Length: 476
Image (tube, rainbow, N blue to C red; front, side, top):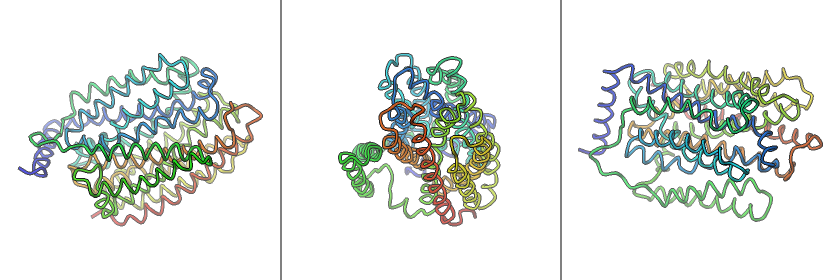
């Protein structure tokens, strides 16, 4: 039996299991949604704890910007290898390793005594989160392959964005009442539920009976080098050493693409990806939209707490508005993308998102908070309309036996977009605020960083609208 026929047989067996046990697929969805809620929540919740961390660990502005960025580096470097391995050995063990590893890494916060050790914890969280994100959407796309895939992906998208945006609210409350360390260990209790449900209800879909395809270790190491050089190079401009790192990273990108197209068992075959217009344009739109989205929590956290004088919980409550709107729209947009043209829905979302940043660019230190509320509403509508149709179109353009690598590519576009935009923010922080703690006399410089960051995000999301629209028709 060939690899493709084996994969088809396994997919059929798995589909039959969930048809015979219809409740099982919903328990799988619950497990995935819990995980996709707590991982982003842990990552974004730390933004509300940044002032407390700065005081406790004596961290300056540059060190503070590394706290969210360190996780991004960790979450990028293993995404493609994890997706490739999951397509061979099965998505369940990789997913479980990710959830359990992330939980254990979070508990290491009890031994943190310096900002350097905290950054190590953040890197470990990122590494294990990459295993989760490389498999979660692929599991859902497989389990719901015969029906309701768009709706199920909508719930997973809602979970991610609820986690990202509820993180500041929960993180602010935990910081005020239980200390900043609780932002790390608190979500572990909820992770235990996801682990139990995954063990019981997720069926492993590895290619049993077939020899495992070897992992492209050379390509994986090149990819790690690319992520490292680009991040450190961009964040340290305009120093000569960082310019050289950035140029080396760009050069390695061309080496990586050339090597992948020649490798017998590549992480991703770029020649095939380029021929799949729907997938490639969806990835570019995702990269740009997440590049626009990720700095929002970081910048608004600093703006609301330092410049507007809000407490961590008050700032988190305001940012929660975006999550409510995304939570309502993401499943609706998912259902609509099962019936109508996904690119139109996603493109409208990009334009709403860009308009939200256009409002935020005009923020001043004494701006009424209603301006922030209007902007957050536009951002919520925009991302709620964009995320699920974009993912549904992308995953629907690849065969089932490549869903893990497709899922990994989507998450790679997300995390690389996040890392790119945070590298830009780190560059702005280092050039305008330098290695100093953020004090009242530096508030004008902080406001300039915030405005420039939002202006960049406005541009990213506007260009994303073009890629979203130009992917072409993807419905039958």
